[in-house]
Image 1 (spheres, rainbow, N blue to C red):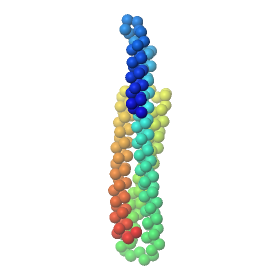
Image 2 (tube, rainbow, N blue to C red):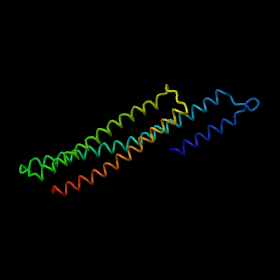
Image 3 (cartoon, rainbow, N blue to C red):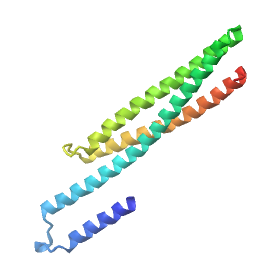
Image 4 (cartoon, rainbow, N blue to C red):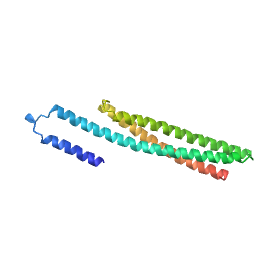
Length: 172
Protein backbone atom coordinates (compact mmCIF):
# COMPACT_ATOMS: atom_id res chain seq x y z
CA UNK A 1 0.00 0.00 0.00
CA UNK A 2 2.86 2.39 0.82
CA UNK A 3 4.50 1.55 -2.46
CA UNK A 4 1.31 2.41 -4.37
CA UNK A 5 0.98 5.69 -2.48
CA UNK A 6 4.63 6.53 -3.19
CA UNK A 7 4.14 5.78 -6.89
CA UNK A 8 1.01 7.91 -6.99
CA UNK A 9 2.82 10.77 -5.27
CA UNK A 10 5.75 10.48 -7.69
CA UNK A 11 3.33 10.49 -10.62
CA UNK A 12 1.54 13.59 -9.32
CA UNK A 13 4.80 15.43 -8.69
CA UNK A 14 6.19 14.30 -12.07
CA UNK A 15 3.10 15.41 -13.93
CA UNK A 16 3.21 18.75 -12.19
CA UNK A 17 6.61 19.37 -13.74
CA UNK A 18 5.28 18.66 -17.25
CA UNK A 19 2.70 21.44 -17.14
CA UNK A 20 4.14 24.56 -18.75
CA UNK A 21 4.24 27.56 -16.51
CA UNK A 22 5.09 31.15 -17.32
CA UNK A 23 8.75 31.94 -16.72
CA UNK A 24 9.26 28.68 -14.74
CA UNK A 25 7.04 29.76 -11.82
CA UNK A 26 4.54 27.30 -10.42
CA UNK A 27 0.92 28.18 -10.00
CA UNK A 28 0.38 28.89 -6.25
CA UNK A 29 -3.02 27.20 -6.39
CA UNK A 30 -1.47 24.08 -7.91
CA UNK A 31 1.27 24.05 -5.28
CA UNK A 32 -1.33 24.38 -2.56
CA UNK A 33 -3.33 21.51 -4.08
CA UNK A 34 -0.20 19.37 -4.19
CA UNK A 35 0.55 20.18 -0.55
CA UNK A 36 -3.02 19.30 0.39
CA UNK A 37 -2.78 16.02 -1.52
CA UNK A 38 0.47 15.16 0.24
CA UNK A 39 -1.08 16.06 3.60
CA UNK A 40 -4.09 13.84 2.82
CA UNK A 41 -1.80 10.95 1.91
CA UNK A 42 0.12 11.37 5.19
CA UNK A 43 -3.14 11.52 7.12
CA UNK A 44 -4.37 8.36 5.37
CA UNK A 45 -1.13 6.63 6.38
CA UNK A 46 -1.64 7.79 9.97
CA UNK A 47 -5.18 6.38 9.93
CA UNK A 48 -3.87 3.06 8.61
CA UNK A 49 -1.15 2.90 11.27
CA UNK A 50 -3.67 3.79 13.96
CA UNK A 51 -6.02 1.08 12.67
CA UNK A 52 -3.21 -1.48 13.05
CA UNK A 53 -2.58 -0.41 16.66
CA UNK A 54 -6.32 -0.49 17.35
CA UNK A 55 -6.47 -4.07 16.02
CA UNK A 56 -3.69 -5.05 18.40
CA UNK A 57 -5.46 -3.39 21.34
CA UNK A 58 -8.67 -5.21 20.37
CA UNK A 59 -6.69 -8.45 20.57
CA UNK A 60 -5.43 -7.48 24.03
CA UNK A 61 -8.96 -6.65 25.07
CA UNK A 62 -10.29 -10.01 23.88
CA UNK A 63 -7.45 -11.95 25.48
CA UNK A 64 -7.90 -10.09 28.77
CA UNK A 65 -11.65 -10.78 28.70
CA UNK A 66 -10.97 -14.47 28.04
CA UNK A 67 -8.49 -14.53 30.91
CA UNK A 68 -11.04 -12.86 33.16
CA UNK A 69 -13.70 -15.46 32.23
CA UNK A 70 -11.28 -18.31 32.87
CA UNK A 71 -10.34 -16.85 36.24
CA UNK A 72 -14.02 -16.51 37.17
CA UNK A 73 -14.58 -20.19 36.29
CA UNK A 74 -11.51 -21.17 38.29
CA UNK A 75 -12.70 -19.09 41.25
CA UNK A 76 -16.15 -20.63 41.09
CA UNK A 77 -14.52 -24.07 41.17
CA UNK A 78 -12.57 -23.14 44.29
CA UNK A 79 -15.65 -21.64 45.92
CA UNK A 80 -17.65 -24.83 45.24
CA UNK A 81 -15.06 -26.75 47.15
CA UNK A 82 -16.50 -25.99 50.62
CA UNK A 83 -13.48 -27.27 52.43
CA UNK A 84 -11.62 -24.02 52.07
CA UNK A 85 -8.65 -24.46 54.28
CA UNK A 86 -6.44 -21.48 54.92
CA UNK A 87 -4.30 -22.50 51.98
CA UNK A 88 -7.28 -22.43 49.61
CA UNK A 89 -8.35 -19.04 50.97
CA UNK A 90 -4.92 -17.62 50.14
CA UNK A 91 -5.05 -19.16 46.67
CA UNK A 92 -8.53 -17.78 46.12
CA UNK A 93 -7.40 -14.29 47.15
CA UNK A 94 -4.47 -14.50 44.72
CA UNK A 95 -6.74 -15.67 41.92
CA UNK A 96 -9.17 -12.87 42.73
CA UNK A 97 -6.31 -10.38 42.53
CA UNK A 98 -5.22 -11.78 39.18
CA UNK A 99 -8.81 -11.73 37.91
CA UNK A 100 -9.09 -8.12 39.05
CA UNK A 101 -5.88 -7.34 37.16
CA UNK A 102 -7.35 -8.97 34.04
CA UNK A 103 -10.49 -6.90 34.46
CA UNK A 104 -8.39 -3.75 34.78
CA UNK A 105 -6.50 -4.71 31.61
CA UNK A 106 -9.83 -5.21 29.85
CA UNK A 107 -11.06 -1.82 31.05
CA UNK A 108 -7.81 -0.09 30.08
CA UNK A 109 -7.77 -1.68 26.62
CA UNK A 110 -11.43 -0.75 26.13
CA UNK A 111 -10.81 2.90 27.07
CA UNK A 112 -7.66 3.05 24.97
CA UNK A 113 -9.56 1.64 22.01
CA UNK A 114 -12.29 4.27 22.47
CA UNK A 115 -9.71 7.08 22.58
CA UNK A 116 -8.05 5.81 19.42
CA UNK A 117 -11.41 5.59 17.65
CA UNK A 118 -12.10 9.23 18.53
CA UNK A 119 -8.64 10.16 17.32
CA UNK A 120 -9.23 8.31 14.04
CA UNK A 121 -12.48 10.26 13.54
CA UNK A 122 -10.57 13.49 14.12
CA UNK A 123 -7.94 12.43 11.55
CA UNK A 124 -10.64 11.77 9.00
CA UNK A 125 -12.42 15.10 9.60
CA UNK A 126 -11.70 17.32 6.60
CA UNK A 127 -12.53 20.41 8.68
CA UNK A 128 -9.50 20.01 10.93
CA UNK A 129 -6.67 22.24 9.77
CA UNK A 130 -3.52 20.12 10.18
CA UNK A 131 -0.21 21.92 10.31
CA UNK A 132 3.23 20.25 10.47
CA UNK A 133 3.49 20.66 14.27
CA UNK A 134 0.08 19.06 14.80
CA UNK A 135 1.06 16.28 12.43
CA UNK A 136 4.23 15.60 14.46
CA UNK A 137 2.24 15.54 17.67
CA UNK A 138 -0.30 13.21 16.05
CA UNK A 139 2.54 10.85 15.06
CA UNK A 140 3.99 10.98 18.60
CA UNK A 141 0.59 10.06 20.04
CA UNK A 142 0.21 7.14 17.65
CA UNK A 143 3.73 5.93 18.51
CA UNK A 144 2.93 6.24 22.22
CA UNK A 145 -0.22 4.15 21.76
CA UNK A 146 1.81 1.62 19.80
CA UNK A 147 4.28 1.34 22.70
CA UNK A 148 1.40 1.05 25.17
CA UNK A 149 -0.06 -1.80 23.10
CA UNK A 150 3.35 -3.54 23.26
CA UNK A 151 3.41 -3.13 27.04
CA UNK A 152 -0.16 -4.37 27.40
CA UNK A 153 0.62 -7.46 25.33
CA UNK A 154 3.72 -8.16 27.44
CA UNK A 155 1.68 -7.67 30.61
CA UNK A 156 -0.85 -10.23 29.41
CA UNK A 157 1.94 -12.72 28.76
CA UNK A 158 3.23 -12.24 32.31
CA UNK A 159 -0.30 -12.58 33.68
CA UNK A 160 -0.72 -15.81 31.68
CA UNK A 161 2.41 -17.20 33.31
CA UNK A 162 1.15 -16.16 36.75
CA UNK A 163 -2.22 -17.76 36.03
CA UNK A 164 -0.54 -20.98 34.97
CA UNK A 165 1.58 -20.92 38.12
CA UNK A 166 -1.47 -20.35 40.30
CA UNK A 167 -3.18 -23.23 38.48
CA UNK A 168 -0.25 -25.49 39.32
CA UNK A 169 -0.43 -24.47 42.96
CA UNK A 170 -4.16 -25.08 43.18
CA UNK A 171 -4.18 -28.21 41.05
CA UNK A 172 -6.74 -26.78 38.57
